[in-house]
Image (cartoon, rainbow, N blue to C red; front, side, top):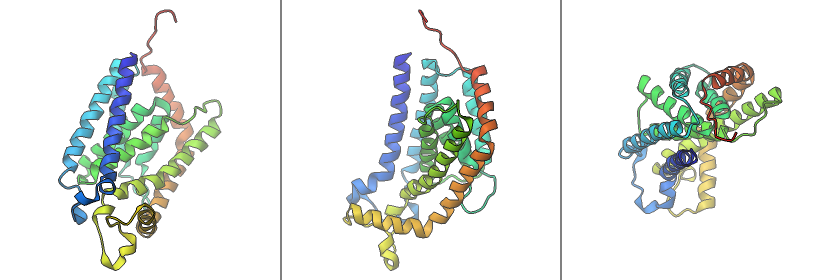
Length: 264
């Protein structure tokens, strides 16, 4: 069982390293960056998507082998993935998206692996349903997966329900901004406009200057949308978090595979 759990952790670590590598590649190897413009990653995005989906399936199999989940919990993952994909279509102001609430709550209740899988796979299903497939898709999957993954690392506050919901809502607020800030990196290093050069990256500008330029770009192009996303994440979680946590825990107790070890 321990080896299977280590395998699951290794798969998630590999997936995250691939995602980080794809996002940060231009800054690490600037000489290899083409002038791609809006078509950035159009060549490698399909391969990255296939690799990520394969790693997600491997994580599901490894989780079953570790005893962390039963086949019924995998079925619940499928249902919640479909539900979360539909939630992405819920309209709202600015960059509001209801798709982030369930990865936060499920990652917190069911653990990092479940949270990562729910976040990544629900973005894939949503893109397929809404014809939103493009070079941005694998990066959306990675970052939403990280939302669920990191939610599983939060401290357990079941004894203090109000504090628990407040923490999760605040976590959703933070990720509302982080999502936009990270996702911009899939295209920002590949575009340049001479008229606004102070907002765009160029090879050789240095770390501090790159951060300054990105901050200017983020404030001008993304901040308002991320305010809507962050406020939506927090508001929905604060409003619906308590009943949803009770429901998720009820399903967890009913369907989670409990492994009884000898001598326990």
